[in-house]
Image 1 (cartoon, rainbow, N blue to C red):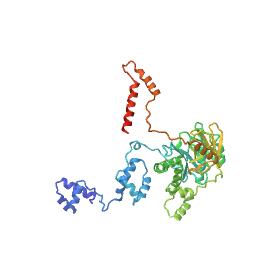
Image 2: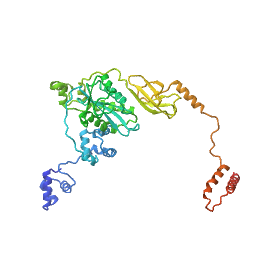
Image 3: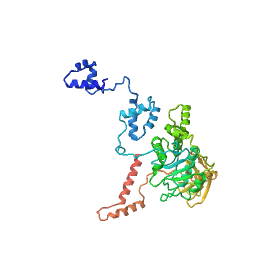
Image 4: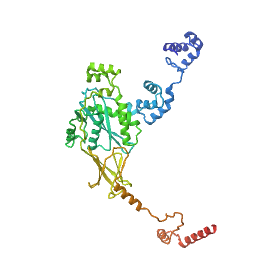
Length: 461
């Protein structure tokens, strides 16, 4: 391997007309080494590997993944290649991506300029920031709706998928996220979310005031066009989208929720944070003692989240009415929360019905579009794929199916059925449109051809 000075000397001597052998004797190098550097086959300061680079084996897979998604995070790809047997560290992995220039260039992203930012300290347990994350083309159909709640002090977040973004689903999502976080902060920060505040005035809607009272919190609204005031949840949205959603393998909303909860516990909560953030919560001495006890140089989100001091939440959720409209299937079942519930025979098949559930109760109601409750089921655990049939509904459906059975012979599809007299008459009417054309149509000739074909067929048999 040439040093930079040797490369400079060899190039200068070559330009002065020295031979390869003379340069090699002058520098005390092998002639093959000198020739390789002068021909551009070797680079000064870069040593050739004596063994194959383990990264090279994964280049085709990485090229394929970058072809699928040019913006996929390297940390997400690292998790994938580790499962495929990648033996090196994350730093070696990212260095290989840069060295081989595997990530495609994006002209649109290249010109984006950032804004000035600064970290604002939030006291532990002071605030939870909320925001909807719209996820296009969800695997279960339509767009995905993900409500995200983030604690800005530690950076810990939890999220819940929903069928829509109306107020009952907001309340249901908030309650489930609070239970995943283990409590609530003293303030809830929203942007101009229309189901919570009036977007024009920023005043909390009267229908949401009882919700805030139920959980004993204060609602804080971001100023107009200042959504970056809730930067913690925005960053959580970005992390969940790029790190989880892009590589998610779930096909149903229930599977996605399970995978997301596991992702938050195993990956999101283990992200490192600065020691200064832990010192802001515990003080310098407390942070030093904590790090000495754990034996780590930097705390994680989970380490700081332990000291959030969240307030307890009510045993039952706020009794909002969650309602969706679905179509009754041919098995007289209607889908709701990843399960299927039977409907009575008074509801037409393929007709729309409303399925609703009041938070805090154990029932699911089937309601007609006119608002009439036609049946009530016991609610099952969402996302389990359970089919809930009432015995009366099942008996009625069995009777309907059995009554449709018949002993009549099946339809014969191989008989010869030429055009009947009525069909021939209709054909004549159609052909009468061309009376101006000198065309003679004789149905008797058609009949004669058919009769001869029948005779020939019988003779062949």
